[in-house]
Image: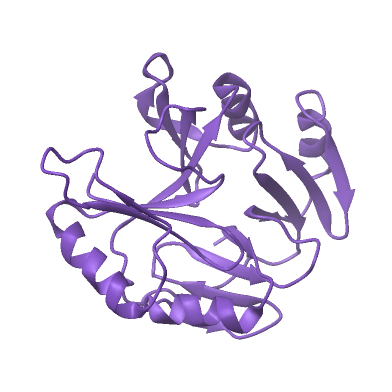
Length: 229
């Protein structure tokens, strides 16, 4: 697993409590702190310079960094490089000799259901795609002309790109998306029972005004879209 999510935190205990309440599994308690729902692997990073985004690990990123510099600014950091896509989300290119090994075989699905990847609203969808294609992401579904398209890399990390302002609800870049179909109402009730605060209750997609989609955020601000579809 060489592609993971990074969530910053103002308080590591609070972040761990958030994920534990949602029944994420703790794979590593510290250095780094890693949680998972069996699909997505999340590093909770308490460093004050940590930012929300993704980390991709490889032995050497030098040539790729030079390629990306033709598209967008790339900064050298300890053990790799960092850049931003047009949405403002961070992409960390981390250099490491060995692969990350996380055994997800026994990790159970979390309270929030079926993981569907990262969602980004971008003011420049073409440039966003150019950056991620350079990093090995390829199209799996959607259509740019309709303002929504999904790209995925070989690690199975899906990223959905939407034009800025296209979603009729709050949007936090980046956010993780979960699609639960008819089960979402029950999942929303479980989130309420867990004590995790709901950032937005969404009724826009329901003719009867029922809250059938919600947004939550972890203590570091990473968004979670808990949607029916």
